[in-house]
Length: 211
Image 1 (cartoon, rainbow, N blue to C red):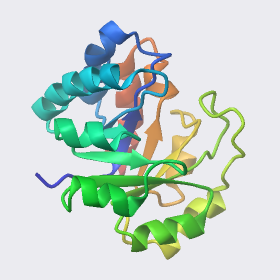
Image 2 (image 1 turned 60 degrees about the vertical axis):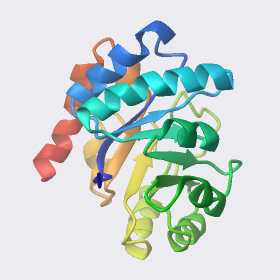
Image 3 (image 1 turned 180 degrees about the vertical axis):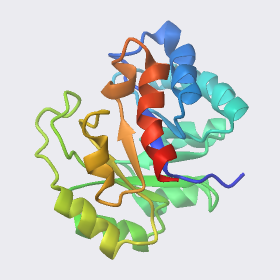
Image 4 (image 1 turned 120 degrees about the horizontal axis):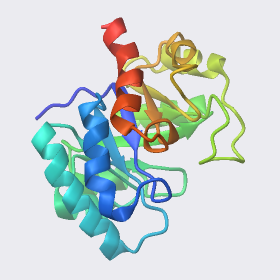
């Protein structure tokens, strides 16, 4: 299946979602309009991540939404997830492509670096994440990425979907989308909410309006 990588991209967080409620919580986000799901586990064992990934994959396949695994190439390959997301200290893009194959969705974190984005585009990345545009509790030490960098990224990297990530809420998402980015990636705005489905729907509505 060919997925359209744009719109609302939600990222799980072990501090915000109880382990026993991961699947039902992610399902609420999907019902609210999330188009991409990323499993991000920074403190769990490989065995636990594998188990959670398998559970989530059954859910995302049912809704025909791609599941992206943060960092863990081998887990993504072993369960047949749609793709992987790579940060600065993870495997290289070329290694991920070799392991996962030509059909995999490979995303790359660019932080505030246009140069990193250009290199990732040359290397065949399927989407890029730039951020943070605002303060976010999940990255408290990260310097904000200016809206001008988001605009410049869209100008010089026109052929790869670009997501803004970091501190995005229903109150500021409109200003982020004015930069021309293809989507937003969020953690706290959805999974820190008491009603993830409603929160997801609020953010997704901005893309429905733009379609």
